[in-house]
Length: 333
Image (cartoon, rainbow, N blue to C red; front, side, top):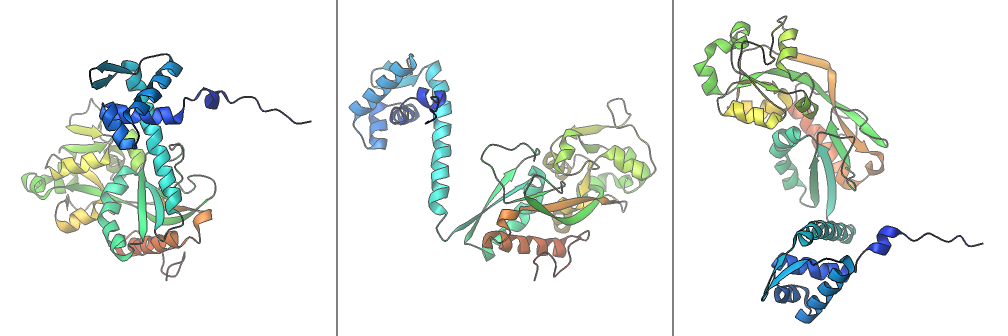
């Protein structure tokens, strides 16, 4: 006996996509004639499709004043949803069309801080050597709950197992030390000592922001590792600026506003260029706290992935004194 499928209420209730397409064009250009030109149809066709759509929804989508049209409140709500849906469909279609072409594509997921302060500095070298590979970077602080349809080829983060089906390679352990601008150091030379540092303006990463890089990028934890117990809370006797965005703390340091904790992997290029300097020689190594490259097992033999992975691991070996990668391992030549 044939089993009947219950009607899909979402699909059944969907208005005509042709009508929605006409509506989106009319809303975008706020003119039926221009919408018709954009879609290569007649103005009458646009008007008819929109009338049918309004009848289907039971509301007016436009306020009509002469030749000009303006979205109603309902029209604005519908346009926001419809336009975004068409953008997603168009992008998905483009990816499918390009899948068999020579150009290869790779999606990398990492924190906003790692993207801005590590990848952006080094990716131009990769692009120059591999013009046939397109790289998409997705930044997030929540690796476990990503947008639907986002399936990164690889993650760069502190979680060894971000999700099922991925294999992780340990990259480096964490090295943390105080940094500031050269100008701020010149104006506050006492911050090279532990005593002076305690009474300086501290730029601190808030607990929520520590998920971007590491939980121990925190002044309380750092001072404690030096044998000093200080109160960096709101009732403390020192000036504290806190933010959940590590990029903002770095910008504040570059603007001579105080001292922040530098995660070596992110601030090393700025120290080499002189934009930032170390405030003294004190540092803390967290050898038990690692960062990983986690890649999808399904992409293990993908040429674009293999090329990027080999380049990335080689950069880690070249640039990071805390690297755990050894040449000849994990596919490196």
